[in-house]
Image (cartoon, rainbow, N blue to C red; front, top):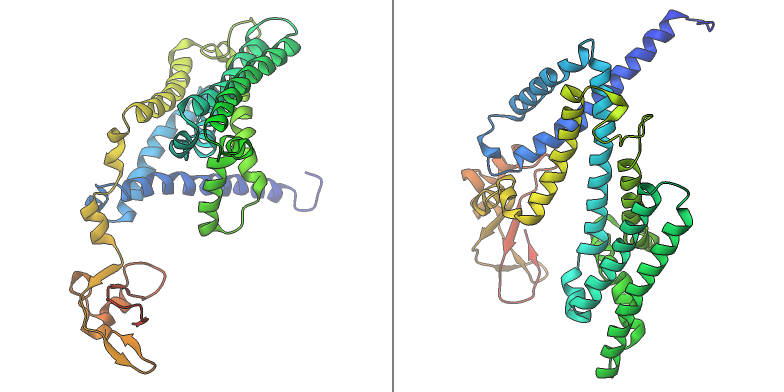
Length: 347
C-alpha cells in the first residue's frame, strides 16, 4: 500500500491469482478431455470445443459449493483429504515404475521366492516401522528403526540364501549378476527403454525410483494417516473437528474413491478397457498407410514410389492430404512399403 501505484498492485495480485487458476484449469480440463478423446467413445464427441464446454460447465456447478458461506470449510476439508490421494497415487506410480515393471522377467531369472521375498522385505519393513513410529505413543524412533533394519535384514538374508543355492546349482551364474538383477535390473531396463524416447537419463533416477521414492511416499502416507487432532483423535474422519455431514463424509469419500479405483484396476483391469480405443478405431485414426506398389529403379538404383499413385485415407489425394493432414504437425504422409530386398525406398 505504500509503493507507487497503490491499489493497482492489489488489482494485479488478484488478476495473477485468476491467471494461476486458469492455468490449473487448463491442465485439469485437458486431462479429462484427452481421456475421453482417446477412449473408444471419442469418435462420438462432436468436437473438442463441445467436450471442453461440457467439462467446464460441470466443473462450474461443482465449484459453486465453494462460493457459499461454508465454502472455506469445504475447501479446507477437501484440501486435507486430497493429500491422501496424491500420496497414494504417487506411491502407486513409483512402485509401478521401480518394482512392477519387468518383474516377470526377474522371476524368470531369479524365481518367485527371491523377487517376492525382496519386495516383501522392503515394503514390509517400511510398513511395520511406520506403524511403530506413528501409531505407537511415545518416542518410538529407535524402536521403529530397529524393527526396519531387522525385518529388512531378515528378508535380504532369505533372498541371499536362495540365490546362493542358484549359484551352487548353476555354475555359470555369478552372484554379482543375481544381486544386480534383483536390486536394479528391471528399473535399469525401464531407463534404457525411456532413453530411446526422451534422451539421456542419469543412473541416479533409476536408483531413486527403486530404493528411495516409493519408500519415502509410503512413510509420508502413514505419517499423514496417523496425524491427530487437538483432542487426540485421528484426523482422518475427524479433520479439524468439522461436522461429520457433509464435510467429513465428502472428504473421506474423495479419498476412498481414489483408493477404490486403483484397487479395482489391480483386481480387474479389463473393467477400464472402456477408456481404450478398439483396434479398428486405432487403425482408422492411424497416419500410416499400408499399400501394395510395384517398385521401379530410379537414379542411384534405389526403389522409387510415386506418391500420386497411392490411395490416401478417407479417399483423399496426396495434395488434399497435405492441405488437410490428419495431424497438426505437417503435411507428411507416412507409408509402409514392403518389398523383398534390402534396397532403400524413396517416397
